Image (cartoon, rainbow, N blue to C red; front, side):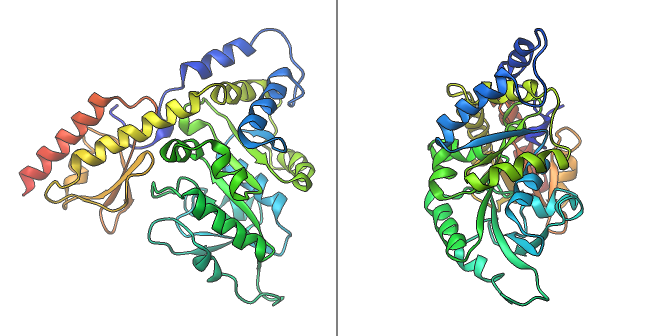
Amino acid sequence: MRNFASDNYATALPEALEAIAAANHGPAVSYGADDWTARLQERVREHFGAAAVAFPVFNGTGANIVGLRSMLKPWQGVICAATAHLNVDEGGAPEVLGGIKLLTVPTPDGKLTPELVDRRMVRIGDEHASQPGVVSITQSTELGTVYTPAEMAAIGEHAHAHGMLFHVDGSRLANAAASLDVPLRAIATDVGADVVSFGGTKVGLVAGEAVIVLRDDLTDPVRYLRKQTVQLASKMRFISAQLEALLTGDLWRRAAGHANAMARRLGEAVEGLDGIRLTQAVQANGVFAILPEGAAERLQEDFHFYFWEEHTREVRWMCAWDTREEDVDAFAAAISQLVGSLA
């Protein structure tokens, strides 16, 4: 399988498998009262600040629901981009499992701004309307774009000034930090985030995400809501051990940085080809493009990737920590040859 469909297709980091194997010796206290989860808290404080508390969960959708439920009152909703993972790729789970109203905003590049947030700051105090309680951004976005720390700080300040909390869906937070060449806290703690969903699976873990709470009064709600939202692992040491490994040294940066570099290599190889138009800047590990009629279907005979927007023929090509240069070059050569034959 020659994969450019998803970073979820990737193999597991050897360090993640080694961490699982190392944790698999003898009994350990369940539900997070184990040494691995305790050490994970130390790593999280190193990366996100002394007040940060991590709650390991099974997956990113669960992380988002647990985190957002802790931040919202029942009559409140979440302002997010229309393309946010919350809205387009979680199967209605926020609404069905979390009872969360999503207040979506169209964006050209997947990124919110204070001005776009204001579009949903309407009917405040009207008991007939869901009241905005949280602003949630995806970093990096579903369109492969990356918020700068300044852009995130502006949104966080705007949310707080209007009595809302600030949530970061960081399924690919590592990719964003690697792209910006900043520490993780620079696009979380330092920009005023209250809760962060930190992703590990897309950067090479078998299964491992975490709700990272940066606000003291939300710690207890998350502890109870994690169980209620069926995200409390009994054998948590195996999730925590992977996250601990990812956050030790520069593993997260190396894995995410490689995925980003492969996406840049692919984008640079196909940009300018007749009939190919990149629709977004290549800033993380995804490339978005529009191909000539019929080209994508023919490429899919040999390479795995998804249509992002079927009506416009826009496709998404994703790279991962284990994407090889020769895979990228072969894919780019196939694209070049195909569009050349269609010219």
